[in-house]
Each structure stands twice: as C-alpha cells, then as structure tokens.
Length: 448
Image (cartoon, rainbow, N blue to C red):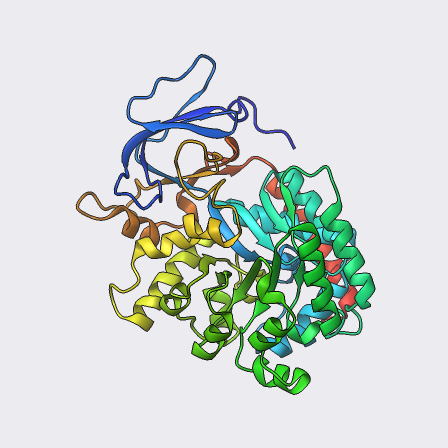
C-alpha cells in the first residue's frame, strides 16, 4: 500500500526541536534536531539547516529515540491471541500452539504476520527477531518485506515434539538452508531457528551448527524458560539444556536465546565467557508461570547481550514493547530492590542493548551519525507523561509513555507510522483478513 498523500520524501527528513535521547551512554540527551539523508542519520544537534528539498517535521514536545528492537517474537502466532489461556508451557504448546501452527496455510500465515506487524510497529517497533513457522515462513518474510520492517527470521525447525507439525531432520535442514541462501530480500535477514531442546533431535542440532558455520548466520532458539523443561530434557538426553547445547557445539555459534529465566550459576559456568544474546520476555514469563528472570545476573555474564521481546500474542497478549519495557523495570525493582535496575537500564533493552542482542549494534540502536535512521518519536505532552525538569527523561518514557504516545516511526528514514497512523497497511483491511484467517485456522485445528 502506498503512503498517504503528501508523505515525507523517502529516506530524507529533518526532525526539528525534539528532545533527542541517543542511548549512546553519554549524558548528551536534550533539545536537538536530527537530519536524515538517504536513510541514515547525517547529523544531530541544535539549529540544523534543512537542505533543499528535505522536509522539516516539527517534533517539539516529543522525545526522539532509536527505534525499538524486539529480540524475540512469533509473527505466525498473532491470530492465536486468547486461544491458549491458563496453561503451563508444555501443555500450552502441545494442546494449543502446535495444533494451531500446524493448521496454517500460506494465506493465514501472511495474515497473521500483517496483524502482528500492525500491532508492533504502532508501539514503536522497527526491528523484530522472529522464530518463524515450520511451514510458510516465506509468507511471513513477504509480509515483512512489504511492510519495510527490519526483520531477522528463519523457518522454525522441529523434527520432534508434535507429529502433525514436525518434519524429518533432513527436510528441516533443507528448508533452513533454502531460506538462508535465498537472494533478493531487502528487509529480512536469515536465521536458523531450532525451536527448543524437546522438539529437536541431536542430529538436527548438529545440522544447525554445520549450517551456521557454513553460511555465517545466527541461531535463534528458546532456552531455560520454564521449570518443567529441565527434568524432561534430562530424561531425554541425560543432561540439562545448557550442557546439551555445549556438547553439540551450539554454544559456539552466534547464539540468540529467548527467556533464560532458569539460567543460574551452574549454567553460567557451562557458558563461560562465550557470547550469549538473550531476549527477556517478562509478560510471557509471567503469564506462563515461568518466573522472573534475574537481569542483573544475566547481564553480568561475560559475553551477554540483553534485549527484550513481546514473544507471541497467545502468551502476552499484545505486541506493545513500551509496555514490556515498563514491566521489565518494575519486576527488577521488585527482584533487585529499588534503584538497582534503573529506567535507563530498562530502556537499553529495547534500544542499544537490543541492537546488540540481534547482532545489529553497528547499524541501529542509537541516535548518532552514520546509523540507519530507525527512529521513534514519542509525544510526551499529555497529562499522563507530564514531568518537567528535574524529572528524568528515562523515567518519563519507561514509566509513563504508552503506545498512544507514538507519533512517528521511521525505518531507514521512511515513515512507517505518521501522526499515529501506520502507513504500510490499511488497518481495516488487515483486520478483515485476520478475521477470515482466524476462522480458517481454528476450524482446521478443531478448536471450539
């Protein structure tokens, strides 16, 4: 869909008069302009002149931040919201999620991804790292390409766990390699996505390691989420999850893991100083009864990079990353004690640290010259967000800003949300397609 009439020129814009929150670690936030040329940030500072032909957007009263990064999502689960309530993780998967995913076709998978992106981008998300689907991941990729959203994605790999969803080992690895080597994408970067230990054979894990080494791509999986997993993995493999991944060479890949709620000192000793990119998903962890991750401990691991994600609609039930950041901050205040995990620490999860957690720190995650202009503009002029100095900008954003504050969202300098309205999709059409897809999936899955 084309952008509204009078849309700003693609890739070029001057954001004037906002409160820039660069997330660079320096105490340099404050009133400034941001000049974007050819999709990248060219300059940040007060009183910047607009080059000929570059539109000027007044953002006075707004905060200008790096676009939000979600380090763990499930685009293919957006249709399942409310269909898997009140179940612990393994029952949630076996009784609801796996049958529903098996009921997808290309049309319903595409509709699910469009719905998920509509929800996520409206709350300021500019990058998602997604688990994909066993089948029809190309439909998810097509939705992301059309939306112009930065995406890391691959087919979900399962050769066990559910007889209707799992594939053969060779079939799973062939699908993964085909996705990794496909050319012509602009916004989607490939990943290898073995689901988790209980749905993947040792042969599949070893094949994933070989593909990761051959093609230089990251590995994205679920790890140490719920207390019920570890006994089941030990019964199946004779060792726990971290020891299993170590034995199979997975810890020596570019590994991105969701959750790690149950990661403690014993597992940390297995990891050692090897890099580990972790996506914290507080809403999902609470809803499924998994627990509260210790972010100070996880962030203290020698090679750790911590991000955040909404996970999937059936275990959240929305894709509002601002809500997720606020919840992360509140939970750590409870777990660590006041002041030991600040609002700035929480905001890092969705910006600079989130970029590290998806392997894109050199390209996004901060507002500084040379980076891609993935930006979110938050209107902080309402009664809810009131807080003049000395109230800190990080506290205002984390504890008071919600999705209703999102005024503009840019990816590579192009507006994906303008004046609070998503530009890449018609919301009514997206919802109509989603409703039809929902009925089809529920019918095929046999869920009343």
